Image 1: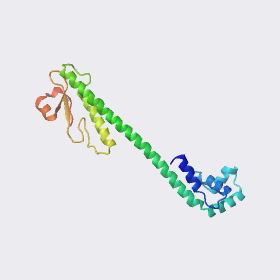
Image 2: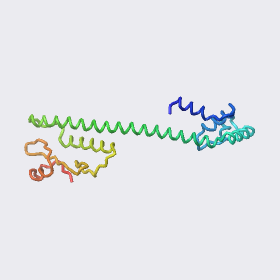
Image 3: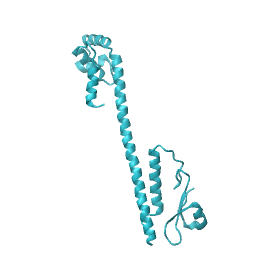
Image 4: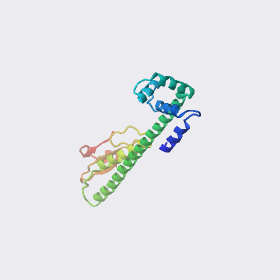
Length: 197
């Protein structure tokens, strides 16, 4: 709730026939933290000491105007406002993390295109395919987590579907991404850079 809503709510919390002094006393009592809230503590905050005449008068007002019920309702509303604020902050953080995951994937995708162009042009890539795959896998995993999807146990480059990718260095010196089946047929053990279980 905004400040204006709080003011309206506070004004509507005042009871008919509640004098200005009784209303001020209730507000003093209500605004205390629940753990330390008491009539005597509220009086000490106002007067600097416990005044017995004030204590008697405040107890009558408390009973007459049902301070306990009103303050319980006030605390519940305040708690709900705080809960909604915390939820809003969490949602904003979740959206930032999701945007970060999407950015990682965009960078990895662009890097894949650049690697492809470098390889097709006969150049040795500056970023390995393994690094690009890891970046993509991390971005995808983070995106899935933020969207509330379950992800399977990941080992290396294995994704949630259980498909794994192996990166190996063929004789021509270029990184190549291949399925495990192709690697098993073509690669020699000394060619394997990284292998997933």
